[in-house]
Image 1 (cartoon, rainbow, N blue to C red):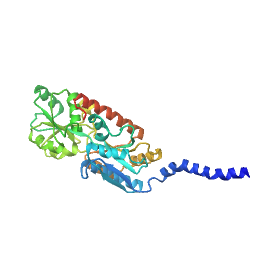
Image 2 (image 1 turned 135 degrees about the vertical axis):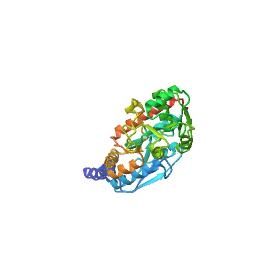
Image 3 (image 1 turned 60 degrees about the vertical axis):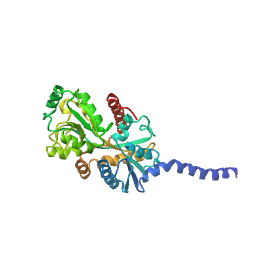
Image 4 (image 1 turned 90 degrees about the vertical axis):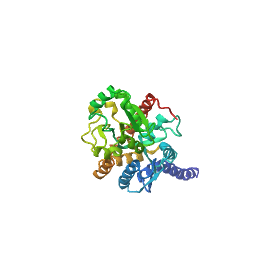
Length: 329
């Protein structure tokens, strides 16, 4: 009798333990079985939002579930990032992260309400946004060599605009100043759009800015494009050489984007999302939409590779900012 009672007592307990043990695997296997939320740290309608929605559209088709885009602008992406960092690690809350949210913020902020390396799961790289060095036509230079010669012959005469202290256009400009060893002055504005009238008017002579924000002026011969920061030439500016082609490989810079989730996302879900990103990165319609936005669809890499890339970018831009004398807030 005793033996029978023990058996009847332990059978259901064993069943419960087995159910618990296999619950995460079953959940990951069924993922996703409801809509997924993609938190975007920028306002609707902007360039980053357009890129996020393009990715969400293609990823939704691959996953077979809607992806609901939720715009949470503010504090340089910190508000949105914190929301995702604190969300359940179940794959139903994702973050459209950028070089700003996951690298440059480390260079600008003394403290963050989360640990960028520990509180997120890096899933994969999404897009690369090369920048372009443009100059006002009043500068007597048609290529990098002529610009360097003119700047060295006229120290302190040239000024470069940026979208503000700590923006990618500022830090890329500082990197250009350092690597080219040119004596040029930084003039910060409240956004790239605010800088453009003075750049076109010649009050400032150059800027390292995103291609979409300058392409119209370049095509209209109102600005001259001298070099791009991508690993290869931009499809939007195929005749413009890269900095690497002109002997400045450290000026390879991309305003990249990537997909993140809360820390401790189940490995099976991480693998599923990364696999689908790899598929859509090769889809012609997706690639075309991203290129029309001035960017390049990036291969996501493995989650581990992407995590290491993000960590290295944080280190890189902290050093650039420190060398430029940018004080953390």
